[in-house]
Length: 45
Image (cartoon, rainbow, N blue to C red; front, side):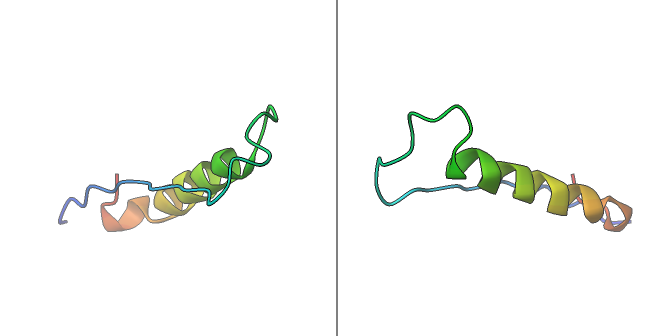
């Protein structure tokens, strides 16, 4: 199996909401981590 290394890139176009404890950057990262985990059987890490 080929090993695939992944990176997660998140961005926010404005600073609005960044002061919140959980913001859209956190949500984007969680979604990316979940997708990578779902592809582990294909060698993603």
